Amino acid sequence: MAELALSLPSGLRPGAVPSVLFNVCLVLLVLTLLHFPLAFISHSWIHDANGLGNPTDFVNVWAAGRLALDGHAVQAWDWQVQKQVEVAVLGQDFAGYFAWHYPPPFLFVAAFLAQFPYAVAFAGWVFASMLPYVALMRAIVGRSFGVMLAIAFPATFDNLAIGQNGFLTASLIGGTLYLLPRRPVLAGICLGLLTYKPQYGLLFPLVLVASGEWKVFVSAAVTAASVALASMLVFGAESWAAFFHWMPMISKAVLSEGTESWLRLQSVFAMVRCLGGSETLGWALQVVVACVVAIGLVLMWRSKLPYALKAAALATGTLLCSPYTYMYDFAVLAIPVAWLVRAGYDDGFRAYEPCALGLVLALLASFPFLKIPVGLAATLIVAALVVARAVADWRELPASPPGLASSPASS
Image (cartoon, rainbow, N blue to C red; front, side):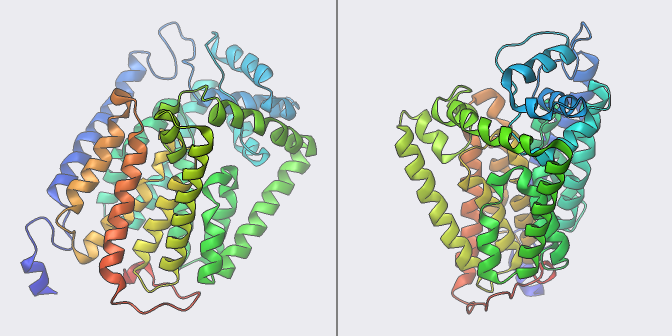
């Protein structure tokens, strides 16, 4: 190992942070840490100069929670009623809608937050949900650089700015993958809670069955069923009826009609629509990509590839397979990036990896200026990095029997 380390270029040795990646993270970290105090002081974050709420995505969470607390949970999915509550709490009208489209269990979070004043709930939500995300990034990377990477990752800026739930999604996916080899029951609980965004959990059952991770599978199923039942008891069966009633309308508006602009979505489906392709073609290519990803994941998880690569592949695949992906969701992409950094720490970074990872961060950070689907490009780069490492190792590794997964410590 000593001879190998000596043969690697400076900055690429195991245990070292490549200077390119470190510098990109440093710039983004400083910008993020400076922006929000200044934005709050200048009244461009949470409240405007008149003391009125700035319309952002978080208002739909607070409004849905308020309706649930007032005993009108079913109306949270009604666009018109939801907007009336949003306008009331912000103190001003705004164009369009911030629609509530989550399954009823997420009303528990919304109702808790709605007990507090809007600004307190907004700030409390983004910072409280950010803590487990940062902690998991630190745990996955295995070094303090994980904290820097987590805060510098451009999706952190997006979620802090609009009060979205990307930190929670990334924490649940990251928690599932980090805990899976160590604490399968806890991993299953994380996965079961991810049902608040079901589009990001579709690949997990397939991988769990293929790799024989039955404890995780059962734990996730019990957790998902439990929170669904709890929401039915608290908010009524009518809340689930409302959810299923309004979902086709939301899907039609976003995925069929593109009312929010295809440029905001970061999926294969949206890319096809951006380029003028039909809805049918978009769905066809999205399904093809999902099938290719699913097959690749099954092969990887049944092999003896390092666990870091398996985890990175699954986290990346969740983004590639969903047609409904916004920039704030790309906190999830920080998870496979963290696993790749972990692999680089342990085995040494490939010559191209630091620049490629720096490009991923730069692409995501460029979205507010370019307004094009850079998120999809960043995801494809991460996927390519995972595949490149996997292909390099694959021929030397015999097939792994189902249920056998190498631990992160050995990756």
